[in-house]
Each structure stands twice: as C-alpha cells, then as structure tokens.
Image 1: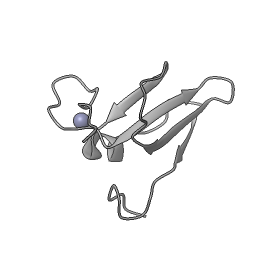
Image 2: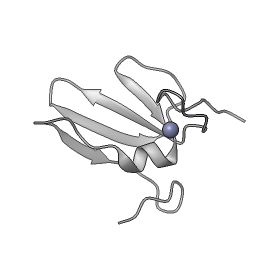
Image 3: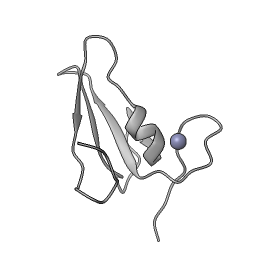
Image 4: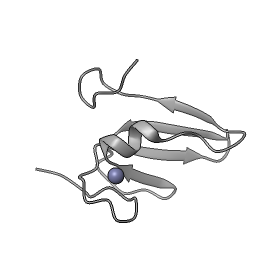
Length: 73
Ligand SMILES: [Zn+2]
C-alpha cells in the first residue's frame, strides 16, 4: 500500500491529496495523491486538504474523485 505522510509540520496523518503549484498560470491544483514526489507539490491529509486555500492572487482548482477523499461540495 502506497502512502506518504502529510507534509504539514507536526501532522501525523497519511496524505490523501497532492497540492501542486503551477507558477505559469498562478494556479494551485489539489488532486488525488500523486504517485511520485514532484517539485512544487505538497502532500496533504484530508483535514489539511480541506482547509487549503490558494495564496493571494492564485486560483485553487480541486480535482477530486467523489467519495474518495470526502470533500464537501
Ligand atoms: Zn495534515
């Protein structure tokens, strides 16, 4: 079973989502946990993924599979 810890400091949970920053488009993309660690990406647990918001001037796009992570609509 593949798993990585949440990248937030002091968070012991397993990551369920990956947040990737696209600097060309000023877009933060939150999607299912990626299978490889990439630059400018952060693995987040469900709680931190839910609380994530885009930095000032950025768009946040959520690509989630319904029911998989449990985001509200
Ligand atoms: Zn976390």
